[in-house]
Image 1 (spheres, rainbow, N blue to C red):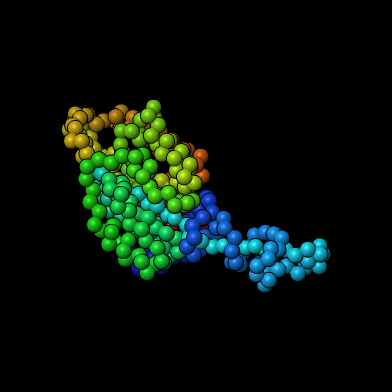
Image 2 (tube, rainbow, N blue to C red):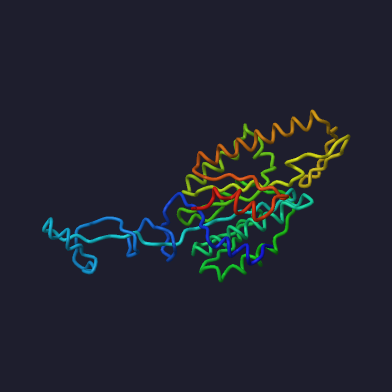
Length: 292
């Protein structure tokens, strides 16, 4: 996991939202509801029972009518984090699973530090989300939950997303290698359907495409027997310059498709390399997910 210096630096940042919050808990996000925070929203005519301290006497002097000043009320937003815990994530000299934990920890800390409500999901067990609020003092609960995650079997990301708790506008962060047949199949369009559903739920999608360095930069060569870590299917393949070039072109095509789809939904897409220094990854590559 990451050290205290890392979190001290992270505490200066805030996740970017696309929609105003509609929850009733106190927090740091601007809400669609009216309240008494410091940011002015609008005027409305006085009604019996209104707080006279909010009367705008300057408007009364000009219009000879009583008007109340309304302000944007600050509420907590919901940050949902879905972690792909399928077997393919447990791969790499520096595993995708460990990077997924670190990314989820970073996002979780940001949410709690800014008084948002955090929902953590294991995509293979969507019915048992960890719901955490109350500020960064609750962060140890997040670390404990992440440490207990196990990576095995298969996962269906689209089905998982449709099971998130709908608790108003917010941010949904997906941490996955997206190496699932339905996600890779353009004709199936599962990835696009996933983004459409998040948009319907008024969620800003943040796609953290977590890949091992070995998947981004192929160094294998010769005749190999490849084994699918989730299905255990095998494939006999000769890895040469031609096959590597084809792989790299298809990978680039996939990432461009994912990036384009995410941008259309006012979201953010980031390739997260397991070999990348954590500070550079979080504070440079992930700048697109923050309000700076």
